Length: 491
Image (cartoon, rainbow, N blue to C red):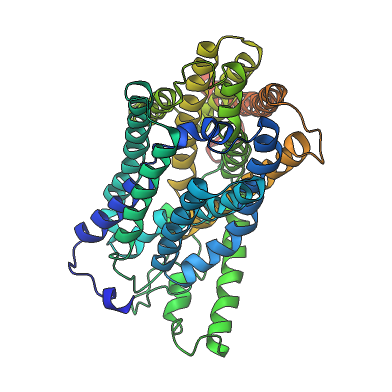
């Protein structure tokens, strides 16, 4: 990789273009919407119980086990090697999907797909190490938008090939293998970053104090609210006080750097989560993401249960394309909605969680596959709308380093919750519920989330009302006449 140590172009255009190529081809997988019909069809001949209870849970378990070490490794090796590893994992996954047989091989497939999802952090973090801060917003938009476009394009292509050309699901996986292979080749041309957020933070002689934009606001906004703009050692300050990249690998300096980074992480997380506002938005993020991942992971099995793919036409590709596009439009519309999120944000979380619960109950009780499709469209669009709001509310007042930490911890907590749900609801060692009953449980799960945030939002609105009444009461009294205590006490 040393031959790509220096970028062919020093501007932001070259690394962004290469990374977007990787994101497009790694996400443009036409076989994705038709995975369950492929596994249950004549190509693999697996039963619904084997897929639900023995194969799919492996992805959740492996993702949970791999996420934290991969998160640390990603920053330590400076992103590119992990992106290359992701490309290799993609290729192994689809080679096994094409030519492997049996439950055990499909479980290995799920393990490598867990590696794929665990290494996604490198894709979203890489660009911040090779472009200047003034381009962050633009390149972030490009990198995220290209994945939505690619997933939509892959779903549309799959539906066209299945419905009009009557192409076998096997060849959809061949196209996916070709696409992820192109993604792997493009990853080799990424420039190797010289720095990372934590372990290889770029030293600077002119260390500036953390600005007030790194503060996390809280609804009380009183003297007891946590202060984030006080002087404290950030990764950049620590980097300036010593050479973090110095010393041989595993030497005393390197161990000192690792200890310093972990201590800094603990302090940053403690301060971030001491804000009630950030804590509750993160709580919704973790709980809802766990439920969303569970629904997306098993929804194709529900569709196959409502309308078996061997006996009816399958429109999974069209539904996924519309759901992704609808979610993207909803997320885009958030930027044009003027709402006091401090006051009404958690009420919005409660209301849309009710919508999510209702759509899942609809998917459970209906016997119509079209109503089941409609419920999924509502569910996915509302989740993508809310997760966009949550990400913005959390990230707007955090530095890039703190946001990366909060993002990683929230994702890890979501996986812990998802693993518990999988063990209890899906795993043969748990309740081992059939897929239709599972979605009844998932609907109840989102109803509980809605209840938590409905109570929380009522408390916030009532507290604000009481504060305003308390503030207006002395003012209205002072308008009637002078206070005997004098001007100082009246003020």
